[in-house]
Length: 137
Ligand code: DQA
Image (tube, rainbow, N blue to C red):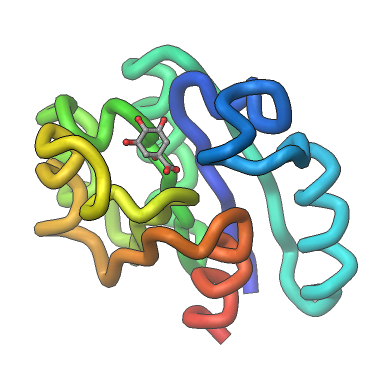
């Protein structure tokens, strides 16, 4: 089972950025925990702050990987291009959020990804990624 986690803008600052919302751990630290927990999964990780790079990565992995776990962060709520890429590829995509986007500002209630995602996991902190991996197993 080959899965990739793709994180969008500002998620490179996890651990430093608004820790009351996003927690105190960096993603790199958490990723080591995930790899230890799911040793039977070939797990990769990619982060970009650039919309087109996220689209390129979806194209690159989306006809080969068994699943994509995508936290497009702010682009979730704005990017028709990433939404179209999720629709274009064959690998199933789970939309993930650390925070519960539905309990936050109204603009976070819109997702251009959800209509073409296999499912959405939001609000479980970093454990949202863990739950997404489990959903593929
Ligand atoms: C986020 C929620 C988004 O609304 C926000 O722009 C992010 C992170 C989350 O994981 O909770 O950057 O995707």
